[in-house]
Image (cartoon, rainbow, N blue to C red):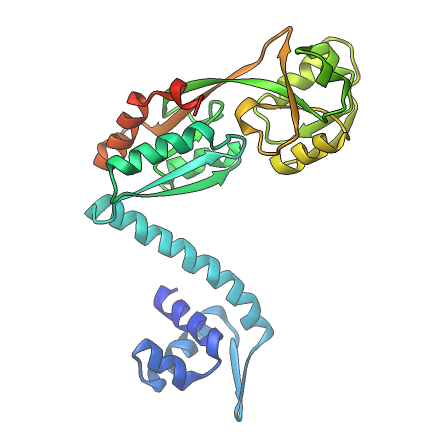
Length: 296
């Protein structure tokens, strides 16, 4: 399908007025009518029906509109990627950020990079761990900030940035709040709030099984803010990265026996550093004082 005809149709959906839409597109009304007619021939049915002065989308038209919006968005991303990589005329860095990573140190780095490169736009895209690999290899993003290696993607180059401990989060009045440290076995015996995007989730469950403890899951969620809110309310406890805490009043304690840490890295496909702007971004990340950023 011709993306231009799809975009003509989407504009027409906004007004349901052929003459108004044609004028806005710089087309004649017959040209717009012909483009829509050809699109209807390609999909095999009527998309828009004119009945006197009343123009409306058919059932097929409404369904196809949803699909065409996605097609248009994908085409726009492809066009943007081509302009950035081939012509270099759009100084923009696209970064996927693993959804479990807090903004603390990263925001300090991004601020410093932006100050040194004021014309560069940074686009940050939150993503679950299993989506980051395809986003990188397809070129949809230039690099990614991750808290664990990406599975089944061997052609990625990792730049370690800093180490972050995992802590147990609980309510202010929870017995853990009276302790300075909490053992992993003690965590196993509490109602647990399961972070479905946690990098250590499988390890945590396996350790509980190895210890012969039947972990009681009070709730599960992909949403970090929901898990923290539930912990704050006293529904249960959860292991979270120390710098991912976003709620005031949430109590956290260091976990021992064993301690659990994660390494936060910036990752990009091998060969991607051929792009000058990304090379500058990765070099700046390597030279940035991430440990000093932790105390800001």
